[in-house]
Image (cartoon, rainbow, N blue to C red; front, side, top):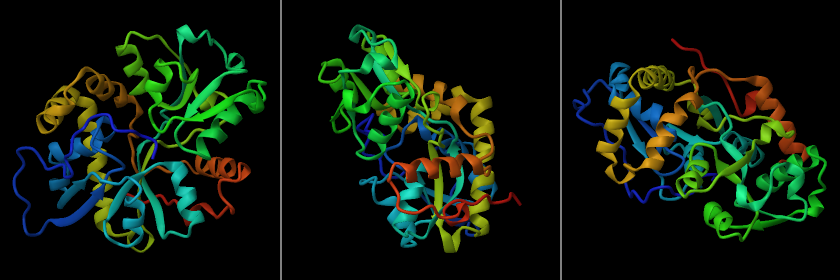
Length: 318
């Protein structure tokens, strides 16, 4: 899990707004989100709000998990059709032998950054020498930080890593740490600005870490070629196009359904994230995936390097 809770919405099912009831012929499809509903899910919600799912003959139930570690295992057990996860998690799932495979992409750009604030005095990566960096995900986060430091000519031994348990902004602004890894450029960075702070950010892909797809869909390997999954991705592409053309309308629908998320932070994220969504959810950048697999293997996060087809495929639109 790379996202901590931004709103305290206890909404488990994202039901459609002002949409007609599903016809008997509509195929039911269950989608598990990675965490509570937030602007990172805008294209999925846009496909729902704009009627794209209905036009493709789908009755889609969107569920936000109470425990974000469960969706991949539910997919592996055949308890849902699709689940959102993060590209780095794919390799861990493959390493564990879970029968899941990437079938589509929602956000095809990294959102993760190493962040600090201007009053820390840190202006370059070299300035982290002798400092503390907070992290949330053991293994992956420290591998990213170590790579960035080494790329900038700083020994990881000269930096102290502190597990701040997802309290990234609090740890940073209270000066428990001098920087944090795992901040999102469309959320925590904006949250810091909203607190009157001036964020200073360093993007991992500029310091030796291969870029990754932030949010991807996985399916059970046995069901990955089911036509309704292809139909879902086609509808998702329509939803993405509609969102780009009508962001205000979709924002209005979003906050109508989730009024507790109607605040400046989420609204800023809604519009900023528009440029991060994959225009074609089918597209699989094979080199990106094999490069990141090597990164995971080189840092001993996974034990083997399976062929790409074992954990990611590119479906074809009908």
